[in-house]
Image 1: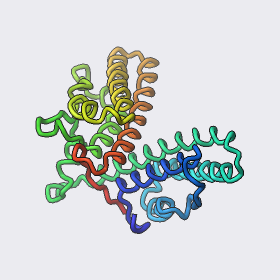
Image 2: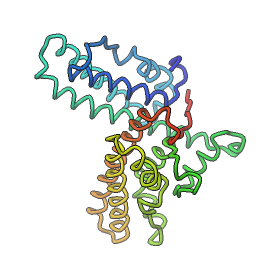
Image 3: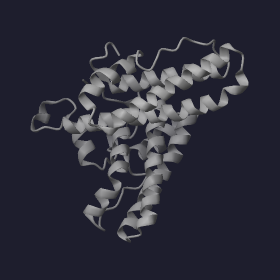
Length: 275
């Protein structure tokens, strides 16, 4: 990120994943302790407390991001302090906190990204290079085309999952009994996982974890739909909550895979540059 006035969400997520990876290495004793910036002076923090708050203060996601980002830095600073004091046995709790907060940060950044793209959908969108991306995202579902089977658009996959999960209850109540969620092996992510991800990158731990989380998401989403249609409110709420948690896991794993396969030709992504 070159400045704190505009933010490329894709770059912000990649930088954060890289930073989390370095911090884990420090926590596990694989790397010497590093200096930690405050949550307000790091690159992401300067954007959050500058243009982020100025432009998105009405979004719940920005306030939740501020809180998660602050607590992430606090836990990171404790890890570095404990390592410098040779108190390695006390690091485990803060390391788990860092991992949880990192997933929260990625999730909230994705929420802001989705809301920003939605606001950018205007009649003049046909002149925008993100046209197909935004239209497919907002029109959904995203079925895999033959030419897409070997390439996963990670930007679209993340945002589609968040949109489906966030609007699952409202969308399916409004559209009625005839609406079905596509199966996990027909959507673009499922097709890519079976034809490319699990075949060519099975040595990447996150690929297997993504496959499990993705299938579980579809299962819970379908269960939520059946509960909505059957007016089983308690079961619907529980299934919806579990689907949302799984979607959060999917979003995080996609970001890690994006980071690890950054130079690979099996994934594609769009930049989302926001003020």
